[in-house]
Image (cartoon, rainbow, N blue to C red; front, side, top):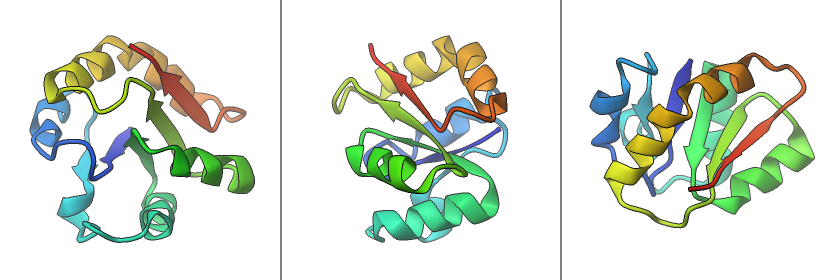
Length: 111
């Protein structure tokens, strides 16, 4: 499953998460820094990414537009990069189940 890390999440996580989540990219890798949430949403949908963000705007998109793309909404505020990495690694099995569930569009992760 390919994760797309939003700009409020460190680009440094791409290398760290790649073994567990192959194909992971950061918005900066795809020329989407400072682009609109709509642009990010559209690219994620087109390219088969699961968006990972702290941003509630993407949750609003998921409610009004459904899936794809799927969304992982980290509800811990802007926590440290190492904590984001830990959360995603700890929840890897849950994330895998979520991405295979055709009914769910958003997975909220709370630390």
